[in-house]
Image (tube, rainbow, N blue to C red; front, top):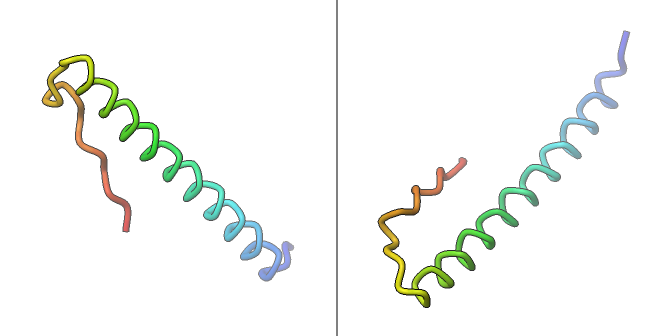
Length: 53
């Protein structure tokens, strides 16, 4: 049987990693959005970013 504290610690580490990945993707979307605007592309082509609670 797994130690509940170890499982919790592992899940917290996974959550922190996913949050960093999501933030990196948000930065990337902003940068690509700015680049697209500079090139005269329509921002309507971009899909909205899903906000996580």
